Image (cartoon, rainbow, N blue to C red; front, side, top):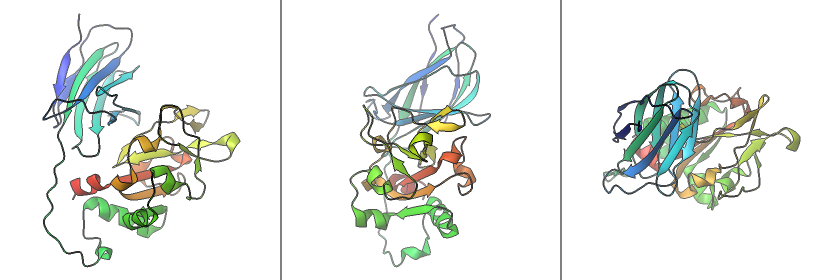
Length: 267
């Protein structure tokens, strides 16, 4: 019996898994431009459990394809994001030993800004995301990089912005990626840093004992470029990481990147 094929628009929708019995529970699909129907490559797709903290992230391929294998039964949230598009979010109900095929569509984020005269940015009278960013910066718990600092430094890649952060160690670029990963600790006991982009976790380190080790297919430079970034937050571990960015790998450090599109979309 073939699997159900479900079209999920840019708005939220409910997807019910089909009951055929392939070898394992599998979610796969394609991410398409809502207007043209063209595939959207190198977008972030995150599947997260509605119960508990399990989640997995992947990048779409050149055909807009993505897949999540060995997923347990239960309710899940599927979210896709890419700079220049509005996020697409949907709900999945997965049965054991099931297969779901999804067609996910994203609309281009068109933002029209009225003329404005900036008197002083210190007022922080901007989007809720910016207010949260500057509020956390005033608390002094982490290391913050503002848009002004990015423009002054002219970094070529995100990794160039992070190399001077104390305790962060860049690993050599891995095959198939355009940049380095980051970790904390000594060579013998490295712990992989977790990255968020616009509030969405984009890497999922593997656990080795009680430490997080790098995923070999992930580099933050594959997700976002410096000219797209409005602000960056860096936290060393569990003691200074805000609750909204806490994960099972929080002890390894967390880097939160806010894109300029993300700031405008939430304003």
